[in-house]
Each structure stands twice: as structure tokens, then as C-alpha cells.
Amino acid sequence: MADAGELSGGEESQEEEVMTPAELINKLEEAWLNEKFSPELLENKSELVECVMEQITHMEENLQRVRKGDVKASVHRMEIDRIRFVLSSYLRSRLQKIERFFPHVLEKEKSRADGDPSFLSPEEFAFAKEYLANTEVYLRNVALKHMPPNLQNIDMLKAVLEPCLDSFVFLRVKEKQENILVEPETDEQREYVVDLDEGSQHLMRYRTIAPLVASGAVQLI
Image (cartoon, rainbow, N blue to C red; front, top):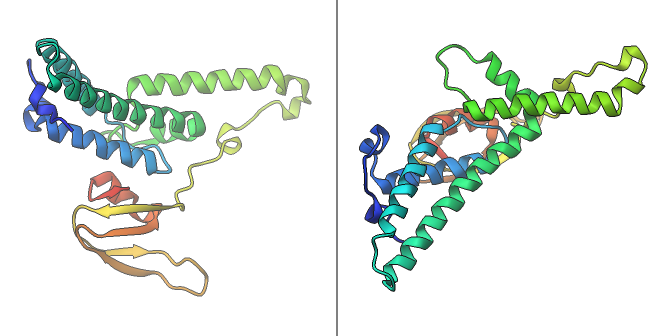
């Protein structure tokens, strides 16, 4: 794969000054895999997305200056297409979760404390609210208005399934973790603690390691 850094150029944002182009793309891939394999919607990475989009623009501008027929142009074009695919897949995964869990996503965003990171970008928040409103209108016009008055109200939080945080996920440990509490699988078992060594891979209940995913200590795979 071509190194994104070979085609970087133009004014760099504050985020790009901290990370090299290659590190930026690695961050995107980590966010993509975490979002893809996590059962719940994770914290939005809008700043990362903006930086990647700027990087793609810079790469395409520099690609225009490459001599036609140069084999490097084809390699660099494939790298741009790969980055675009990862970015599109990441955003698509988030939209699919918003559509599937929209009332719970909005409730989680509404109940977050001041200063806590937002789970939705402004665009995603607007989309979720519009999706909720359209769903309520559709249900009312198609079914609810034909029911008895006492059955014409619907609680979306109860009607729509919540994300299953007890599902199991594969993970790779990026930073050593000690004394991770693991809940029992059956009534006969007891809870216990485990240490997660850096570089090791595990299959664990998502609820147990959700804080580690949020902090970046582990990577879903």
C-alpha cells in the first residue's frame, strides 16, 4: 500500500500537526473496526473524519501533478480509494446503528452530563431526530389512528430493541490492563478478575470491556 504521507500537502490542521498522515489513517481504521464490531454506537469522531477528508483532498490535489503514465499514480489512486472505502464504511456503520437504535441513541445523547463527549455529530443528531419523527408519523398514519384511543400512544424506548451489550466480541489489547472484573456466565460460577497482557487477544463480553474500548486500551477485531 502506498503511504498516505507521500501525497500529503497543503495547510495542515491542528490535529494533523499532532499526527502524521499514516498515523491519521491508522486512527481511522481503529475507529472503523471498533464501530463495526461494537454492538452499540460509540463516541463520534467528527474531528478525525474532517482531518481524513482534508487529507484525501490534499492527496488528490497532489495526484493531479503526477506525470500521466507514471505507475505511482495508479498505486496512489488505489490508496485513496481504500481510504475512501474505510471512511464510507465507518460512517455507514454509524448510520445503520442510529436507524436501528434511534430512540436509545437519542436518549443516551440527551442524558449525557455536561462536558462528556457527544455520541452524535450535529449531522447525526439531526438525522436521528428526523428519523424518530418520521417513524412516529408513519406508525400513526398506518396503524395507531385505527386503534382504540387508549392504544394510540407508543413508547419508542420500549418498542425498539436496545443494543445487546452482553454480546461477545474479539479484541486485541493495546495497553496492559490488570484486575478486569469478569461477570459469571452461569449461576454456578462466580465473578473473577483477569489481567490482559499487551498484544494478547481475547473473546469477552462487550459490557466488560466497553470502557477499555472507549479509552483506546483495547481494539476490537
